[in-house]
Length: 534
Image 1 (cartoon, rainbow, N blue to C red):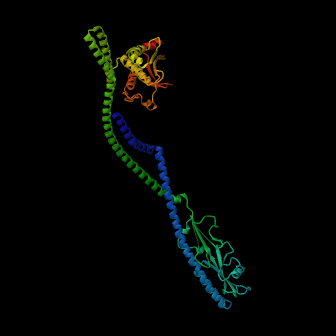
Image 2 (image 1 turned 45 degrees about the horizontal axis):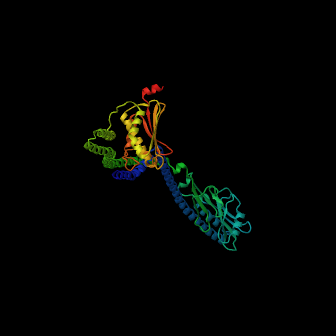
Image 3 (image 1 turned 180 degrees about the vertical axis):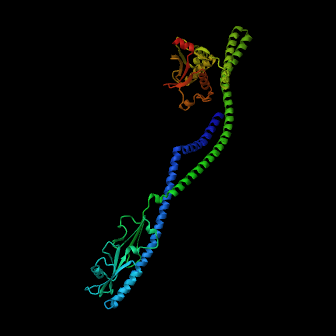
């Protein structure tokens, strides 16, 4: 019970702390791999460059929006001035343009001097050709165009694209502004000059702006749709709601400036080095704490294991010695009765049996001492057939009591190996006794077969029984000390046997069998035996 309790406590401790520590070590091992570190580095760099690119793009769009807002305010103020000029010129025309054309020309010239974007002013009679006044640029005949626009007017000025390659438009108003209008009054506005300002932002090659009439006719800049605009807004004018659009072209070097990219990568490298140093330091601290904790745990478990081992040893010794001591007691009592009757002949035989049981008890103690304390090997050439016969002689009585058949199959030639005779006899005795104990639990045929053979330069001995076999849960731990399948077993026999066979240079294994269990001993032949075989 103490052993099972300690083993459970040991398993729970290892399960509780082992799983966590294994997962932690596994995670750390993955992070330590060069490939994983490289992937993390690449991901961090990509994320940093993505953030930098997003920041630079947002900053450039913010600058564009601010400049576009400013340009929109200036252009809206300028087009509002056109309405005032049309009103003033219309009043002069109605008052007497036919009598005082010089006054109209003078006012028109003054307006054009103060507002260079107004490149031409025309006053065209709606009927006839007399009285036409044209001041400024005359690249095209605008008379019919102005008359048609004035006739379409319903009170609000009409906007018309200037009929040439010049980026200009006409704003036409009827004068007077009624159904009885006599003139068509027109201002020709240079759209490029309308957008001029004191900011050098629009001189950059990456910045683009364009202006269009309300119907979409392009005045300044690229054609509509050639590039998606970032800013679009109509001018704040009731008579000239021209559509202002702006955009900015951003290249990779614009959104990822080399200097800032270098600084970002350097910062990531510094952070990575710092984090790695911190991680290593924390790992060292955790490892030290784990070592201290494990050291204490190992000390406690080692003490518990020693106590458990002593208990198991004591239990094993008591179990192993019970049978010979009981036999000695019974034989001694029988000898005393026979001696009292004077039957000395039978007393001698009984005393001989007492000597045999005493030697058996001594051999048991020697076996346990061999397990706990190494000793020098007394290697000599041994015929394994003799060892098998010795084990058979010792176990014949037990086999008869169980009703088991013990069958030996051995070659006619010697199976000579080099080893300690007592140790090899002990191994065979343990295996054959275990086989008899196994068949004792069988309800069918109780058979134990010992088959010795020669396989090349190896001597093979198979011990097979018809018992219930070995449980799967103990197969992998079968040769571990204190592991047993019997309630009264100590778990030392197979472990000691395995150790003794290995000491002789061989191996002891469990072989798959259809029924029961089969153990195989393989030992190298002695040199003389190998030479004789050759």
